[in-house]
Amino acid sequence: MYIFKDAAKAAQCMIELRRACHKKANERADDWNVKVVGFGAHKGKLLFVEGTDLHWGDPVNTSSKLGEDIAEDEDILITVPVYEALSGPEFDGCLFAPQQFIKSKVEMTAYSVLGRGDEPHHSRAAKVLAGEYRPWKSLEPVTGKLDGEFE
Image (tube, rainbow, N blue to C red):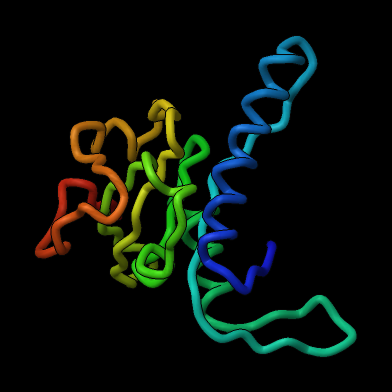
């Protein structure tokens, strides 16, 4: 878990981490066995316990649920508040696809993220939404159920 004060830096970090993992895997294909399931990010208030590594709050729970329980094959999933907080030219050319998930009886919308020039991975999200990625900030509002709903 990493904590950022800036949602844009968190999203950019996830994109770069995924690229670094791909690069390392290609360089050391014979002995590289590290696999990232996915990345998740949410925005909100946290409770820190001073002098410990304990952090509580909705951002921890939601990010964990997205990155560990829902994401597959290195998906980057960000919540609507994170998406809305993104700004800067580093996201020009990035693609975002909205999805709705129900996990542990909690319904949530998250955006699957592709960095500029990144190809969709053969993950569940990429397969379902390959035709629905759109450039940053050009998405229509999310309404109703999307084809990407999973239990």
